[in-house]
Amino acid sequence: MPHSPQDKKRILTRVRRIRGQAEALERALEGGEPCLAILQQIAAVRGAANGLMSEMLEIHLKDELVSGETTAREREQRMADVAHLIRSYLK
Image (cartoon, rainbow, N blue to C red; front, side):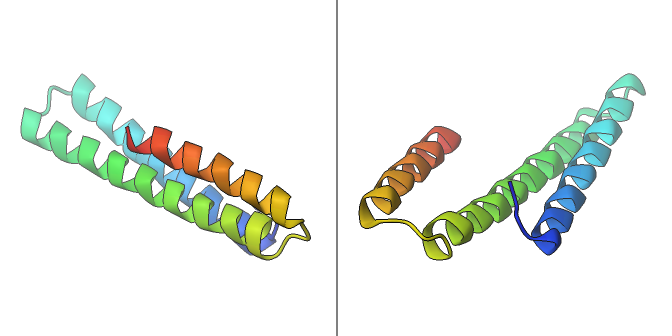
């Protein structure tokens, strides 16, 4: 979870944007919009989700690996956890 108020605000803004895009996608599907418009909306949702992932990953790395008071062993384990997460995200 983002610890600073600024980080939390940025993440919540991104989440709300994704929610709005998902709702627009739902409306397009319900309204019978052409496939191209729906595909464009899906691409927008995907891009927004990727941006959210990128922002959260940056915050996590900063908070856990740079700013945190941890031992080298703890940092190594946390880095392994992040690497695992990134690999699963990229599948």
